[in-house]
Length: 639
Image (cartoon, rainbow, N blue to C red; front, side):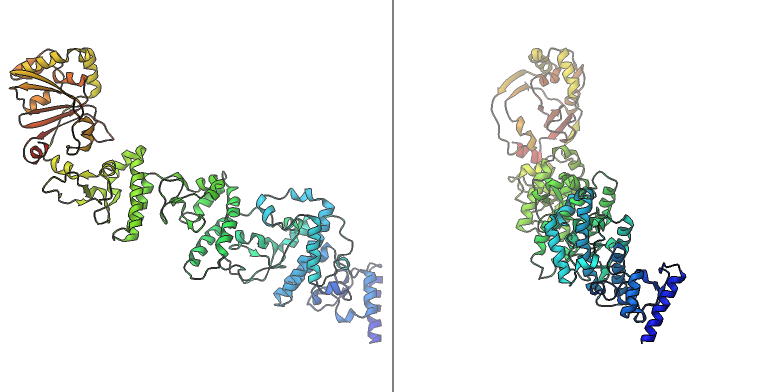
């Protein structure tokens, strides 16, 4: 043994002499396949180094491990403490141990992290906190990643970590840390797999990438404080990192990519939906979501106004991603202001999310719902109940929705054009197309059923039904197309021009006398009726406002045909009873004091509405005139 030892020492000295006393070219055998120069190896007599480095890769082989030889090697450059290069060797050691399936790899990784925590503390005091704080990109990481920024507490945490793993940090790193390492050091450290990470999710229900890794590179890892934001795409550190400086240098405080954030949000939504299917859910999961989701939204809001927001919107399309405190819902079912809310169809943005208004609006949440949103909700409800009658709560919800639909005045035209899309409960509580329903506004009629129509639900008022465009039995039975006839009606603007030319109402009585004379009337009776007449049995509900005071002109002994009444709606002169009305405006003079002119003659009832207030469709207000026969049902019910 002595002879062999001397031989080895002589061999080392001889090779050093050959290279001019530089010794750095001497190759020493080690336990691994490659051979390393001894200046890249470490003194095995240092116990702290044994706890950090791969035994076979970074220490001299047994051939060069006797005390005398090691002393010689130390003089020639064998390392006894760690430098920045040594820290990289420690990282490589963890990676090599893990690749060889050595169970100690995780312990070595945690030791290295504890060592780096202390080193980072010293470095941060060298470079100053302000220098590296500038690299922080978001407030969230300052809040979530940094356990405590105070130097004394960081020092205590780092020392505690080293003590936990039996490391004497002072003897391990020596006094080499007096200048900050270059970016090359941090870049290489980030790419080596040395971080201990969770193989399984630490919280049940979290979205998780199933890699099975227990050691990973910092570049694909984040600390546990960011667990709720990255678990679906990145590894989670299974140890504590207390140093803000170290987290910054390892890239753990960089802004997260939009793909990571969107995948995480989608994953949380899907995981929560799955958890709700199981009877046992971790009790703190909801509370954690309530706390963590705003942090995730805060990160996403940084992308508002950038091209990435369109990428995000596309990724979230069709996903229930808005957390409302007890569930994730679709942005299409959410508005900042709504008169109606009913789970799971319509929701109002909770006050806790009001600070993310810009993000929510950019991703599809509405300021308020419009008519077609309500249409869609009713269609969803119809699909869900599958033709069954609505429950009491559902019926109450539908009534609120219908009230909201009726209040959408700006969308009235769309409502009328899309009446077949509107669903309204029938008398049995089954959602039915509004065009197939009627409401009974003529209970005095013996036969109040309409072929091909179903009765509307009794909880819907007639006023609401009318505003929704639902037809009434009275309208369909008494004023059907078969029983009425449209007549020409002059435009109101043209009538106003004529009235102005003829002195408005100054010659009204003279015009009526001329009209009576031309019609061969025996007498003209004028009656001022100041009464307010009942409104419950009118041809149409909107005629109610015309049941007030009126001027009644009776042309005794005169009878006009439909053609003659129609001709009075054209420009003068008029031909009546083989005579020509040459003076005044005739029947048109009546519009100087009224909006609606009614004529009863020859067994027919005529109504002229040049302003479109009663007879025209609500959206058009076009001039309209109609003729109704005073026979059968109409005569009976108007008597």
